[in-house]
Amino acid sequence: MDDEQQIGAVIVAAGWSQRMGGVDKMLTLLGGKPVLAWAVDVFQRCKLIDQIVVVVSKQSLGRCRQLVAERGWSKVTEVCVGGRRRQDSVAAGLGQLNRCQWVVIHDGARPLVTEGLIEHGLKAARETGAAVVAVPVTDTIKVAGDDRVVQQTLPRGNLWAVQTPQVFRFDIITEAYRRVKAEVTDDASLVEQLDYKVKLYMGSYDNIKITTPDDLALAEILWQRRGK
Image (cartoon, rainbow, N blue to C red; front, side, top):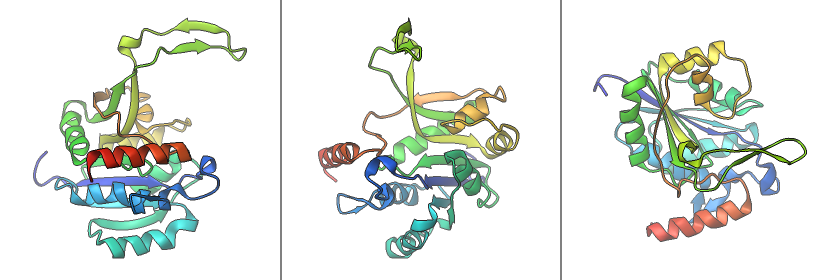
């Protein structure tokens, strides 16, 4: 990246946490600190990141702003409220970034992200303007109908499980959010619909997403295995 190019990050943490028993998973403790703090701490430390916008639920807005002060997140320029869908929350975050040429979008529910994953993503994005962290699928994937009868078994060698961070040239991702209205589960899907090429780069099987209490327990084990 050009040293003069500003790189922003949008950390999305506005989910409903329905499968966590109604508890906001972003504020649940992992290794003694909130799940959200794990992700923001990494982006705060990453030397390539210039500014961070955190998108949270309305109920968590006050607590998140407290965390910004308590943890010294000097790169966090805004904490804003998200929308009904994940893509609405990302759009809200993008609108708060200031003069960025690149943006790294990350789910706050993936607390074990590393600086390396951010840096490798920014490097990979140079090729096409868009890069997504992913890992090869290890399970056999079958396609079934509503009746659960198998219709097709997909060749595993070409299948990847997509994670975050996802990295984009700012003009590409903002164009995608402006023009594509379909509901999607990740940001790259919007970019793909405009026929931009998206580069996959190798992620980590440890980079799990916290969705259920079992995921939180697994994250605790993974964190302890890292020795941090």
